Image (cartoon, rainbow, N blue to C red):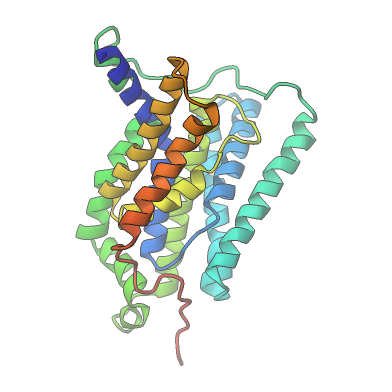
Length: 304
């Protein structure tokens, strides 16, 4: 029983990592008043670009940099459409998801054609063995990126609530007119949020292709971007609660995988859908009392 629990907890942390990284990035972006629905496509293109660069250069860290740069570029594109041009954020985000997904899949076919097996890396990021051979080994032995994601939770919590940057970020997301009158550059802060958030979203995509899977497939993201948006609302735009949402989804996913491995006599489709169904239920409950940033979805135009 102890081994079962430890295995599920360890898998929970690994499965939660890409969702947590992307959720933290989206938290920053939405705190600035922008809803970014381009996460799914950004994660996919970042995972692909990171994989290709790592495979070409032989450097996993070069792959990470390429994935983060992909996220930054798409964040800047989102900024140009919604901050500079003031276009509808829903449409802009969905457009970026379609564009990035199309680029990733088209480039995949160009480079790898109709490969019968997914291309893989000769070496991917490895799990750091901590207390291996002990009951805590399966829980503590994680990827470095998993520990980075966990470390970012308190860092971003403090940055949002206790720093000048966080004060300005929240100001432009709540009342950009008042922030502008106070001397805060609303456009600059929103672009900065999109850049930092985009880098974290790209890192979330890279985790899948460079660490957890060590390969790239068409379905590598599998809706994780949409789940990341859901846990931001579930977490009420607070990094610690976003972590709780990511662990909830990751735990359910890890549990259903373990139940399948144990041969539990339940339909495969039901187990596969379980994490998504319960995440939707949790979101429906938590979303009723969510404190949305007041300026979310509202384009800002400076008068005069």
